[in-house]
Length: 111
Length: 118
Image 1 (cartoon, helix red, strand yellow):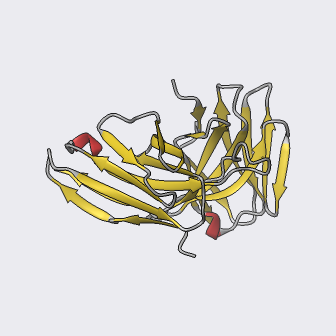
Image 2 (tube, rainbow over the protein chains, first blue to last red):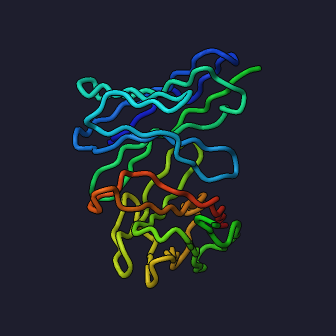
Image 3 (cartoon, one colour):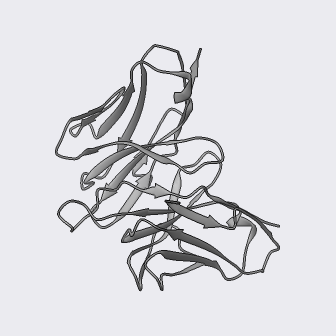
């Protein structure tokens, strides 16, 4: 059973608008939730994270929201830029040292 | 700093051959991981290590072995390659968190190694 799910394989938005990427999880024991960004032929890079005891974390254009009752988190990118076009992975981390990843959402930001 | 370096970047094997992927990190991180990524899927954990001389199984460990003889290196071995092991392999490392007990999950990835098994 997949513990972390990203139900939208792709998302297309216009430059300057908001991008909202979603992620659902099933295990209430995760300690941190993270978003990674991946360009083709490169490794993923860390973007932003949130502790399981918080409900929001903001870093510049990127904000992550955590809804523990719904077991849902989302990444908001405002304003979206063409350079944000990439695959975004949601990951959930347990204190035992392991991260579980979703299947990714491909974001395309059109100029 | 080079960060996390993987070698080789590309490799083609025949079924039944063996090989080793090398991961090196220069950030003095305690934790190291090997993931595989298949088309349309996320990263799946193969094996990981929480310190020199220790290893543990992840989600998909069958057909792989690992060793962490030095803190900066984490080796992934395929004893007898199979076509199902055709994938892109990513090594990652991470550090202990502020209280020196758990890390916060932030992973530093290498660029990946593309392996094809014919």
